[in-house]
Length: 93
Length: 140
Image (cartoon, chains in turn orange, purple):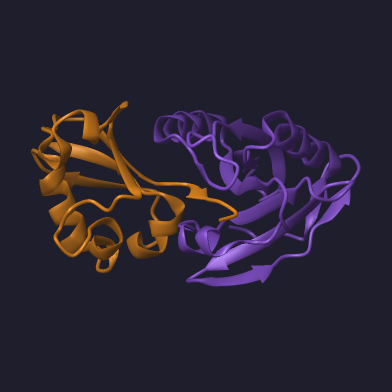
């Protein structure tokens, strides 16, 4: 399945400046695995030591947060769009 | 992003301050969109999903929707703003730890002073650098 992946600005230095890349894979996990291999450094930004998606990284397939589907096992179909969205958070304390 | 000369429209400043006041004593948060020339053009108030006086977090779904609509308009995220309701408008340890957008400007305001200050920073790899901001009348 060919999937369009939208790369957020902070990760573009790792994808040669590209804001969108294409990969093939049947699940979010497969796409993450391919990105990790193809773009060195991106894996550690997206995944923790155990290989789980970091808490402050949100992944959407089309209009849906994968946390409300099957997480990284969420199945993908041809033409799906996967968006990587780092959280925006902070505060005075 | 392109270099920024520090000019920031007063109308956008006023929108940010109005947002901060409207949710006081909670922290407000939002985005500033920029055009293709790297100039700030629009304030987009976002919900602070934590509704806290000391912390903020944007709702990922709202972020997703806003990014999608900006993309369709040919605009980009330019800055992230938030308020420190009663303390100095400088990045806290929490702000630095949770700054995942090194290429964006971080704008902070505080209602501690009158008129409220708006200061701008870059936060990269745990380092904070102030980017002097000048309010301008009319277009940036």
